[in-house]
Length: 108
Image (cartoon, rainbow, N blue to C red; front, side, top):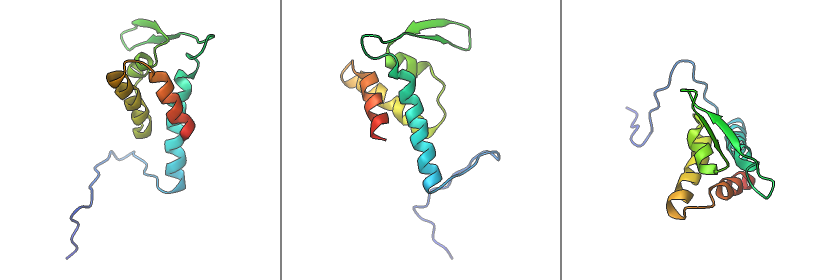
């Protein structure tokens, strides 16, 4: 009898594709970089605002990184971690969310 104690069990939809190895690593890095690139243009003296339209057609114009990331519908686990970086930075310091996300993206 095989003892599977400590082995995680994942229940996923049928259309879910599971990756491992270098492909999974590249996919995670790419997802995190996409999130970082989304807020990158809001930094600096020539930083631009983003116009966000939600599902109820409400428009938000902002250059605040945490606001942009909160409004995004992020499903990828690595991308969600980048959003969590911004939320943690906002909760702990109150500023520097875009910088924290950019730093995380550049480290990858």
